[in-house]
Length: 316
Image (tube, rainbow, N blue to C red; front, top):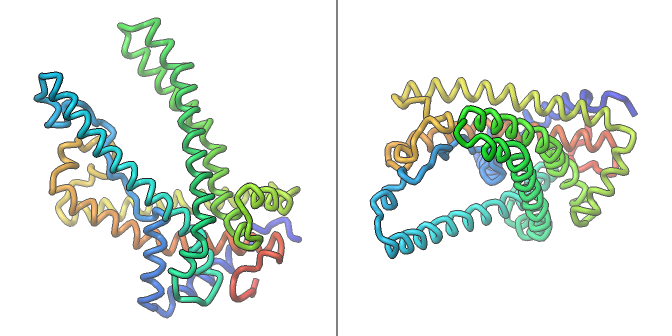
């Protein structure tokens, strides 16, 4: 087996991706757009990072304890509903990771049969995602309590020192979550197809994949470097395109930068249209990119072992 599997997998992945989009078939493209939507390829930066008590108009004028309890109950209900929607979306996103592989690896034009078949695996994958979120949350608490809080307690009148300590804490958190992020990439790109082939859970899927990749971690490093590089380049191009389109339509491109738009602006109807435009452009641009990257993972997996020849035409 060649020591340059990640590079060898590139050309067939381009060919497969071009074959999916040329000649243009509206039904096929629509299904890929649906899949891309559910795996999160449309997400830009819709939420502010400067939400404060004063940004919530129904809270800023509250003075009585009873009113506070009522509003707290309302906020709790809204947040619970929001989290429920996110959880349902995350579940569908997990299931559609399997549907994506099924759709690319077969000639079927239907998504619903795969949705029913892969629901159980999707629930297991969701459990993995929730576990990674929990790990990141624990890491965040550890670094903030260990770095930022001691500075705040020792120098309560020195906000500059606390801010610097917070920056160090965030840098430490970034270092801690990079392995979790790489773990998530490997799970989505390789463990998911292994689960499909062996009809197994995520833990057994990881064990099987570790046996297949044993002694080839240099190739995995090249694969991750290529994938991350493609994502960075695509992000830069997408950012330039979004700025050009938003400015051309008369909207401020600053709304794309988290924290620069207040929550009052984001709650207004004037934000809805530019956000929908950004989401649509992002979805259209990212759909061929995520299609290529998933083909790339499947071709790479095939080169690792022919047991995972999931693609319909093995011209690799």
